[in-house]
Length: 110
Length: 112
Image (cartoon, each protein chain N blue to C red):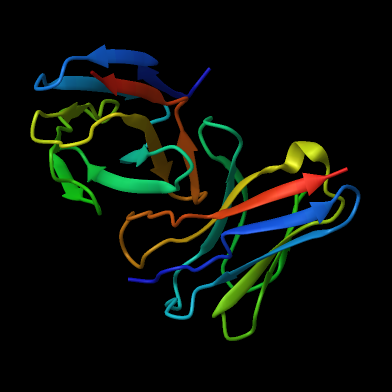
């Protein structure tokens, strides 16, 4: 089973880019990388996902290394409302087993 | 509107009592999940179901039970065997294609 590792916490200045890393060194070829965030104790919110190519949407960009062993979520202009726990998860091959790790607690500071 | 409904949002129970948390979805999703979250911690998978009448244990299934008799429903029972049941519980569902997992608003269970 692919596992992910993320830093426990990170800080970012408001208006700056927040770069959140994730290692998934045992990822298999058909597994997607997903990013979610959780604000307070609400349900996690979907941000972005990708397989091989870099992806961008209105919320963030996802950069996946060529060997797919790691990825980075980029919030281009972080705001105070982006303070949350960010989860990087990997969808296991051929089933719907979705396991979250501890995530990264991002704090955006004024 | 389509979505996932968890109930109740807040629940208090005495130690030793079983309690069942409801999760209903009208998204026509095949896969459903239950997660537990303790204060300041990440989400831990309790059980998941990929199809009706089928479910698999997650990382912390001991002391919990589930059923999946209907596609839209995936109730979680917290049994008296669960040693420390006080936590925040989240239900989710997933579909293909689209690769998006949807979450409910969560249920707070406090055992006194």
